[in-house]
Amino acid sequence: MPELTVSKRVTFSAGARGRRRLEPAAEPKPSAPPPLPRITRLMALAIKLEGLIASSAIADQAELARAGCITRARATQIMSLLYLAPDIQEAILDLPPVTEGRDPVTERDIRGITAEADWGRQRDLWAQM
Image (cartoon, rainbow, N blue to C red; front, side, top):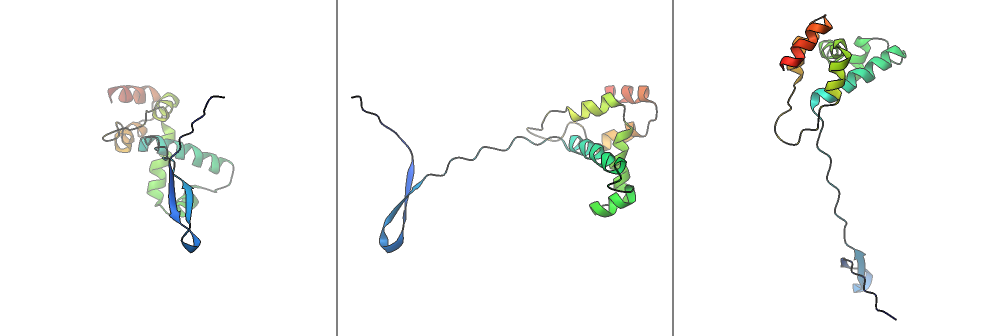
């Protein structure tokens, strides 16, 4: 009959009455995935909040601001991302995770685009970024 060898890292700890207690070694924790850009998270938040307002779970942006402990102006800034053309919203949601350095697109970069009402002009401004 062939021999079978099993290897596993273990540690011993002191138990009651000086006995040694066998404990399995801690498994390495998987590393967290790199974070998504902040603008991506804000775009997703704006879509979620729009759904809450549409379903009447939250009455309006003023109630939203109170519930989120933010100012009405900040709530308006976040919700203004919904004025972007659908393809720009999709591009923002599809931005890759940030592995090093700063976010490639910031909310401040997007504010000028959200102020533009014409989607064609928005697309031109987005392409320039």
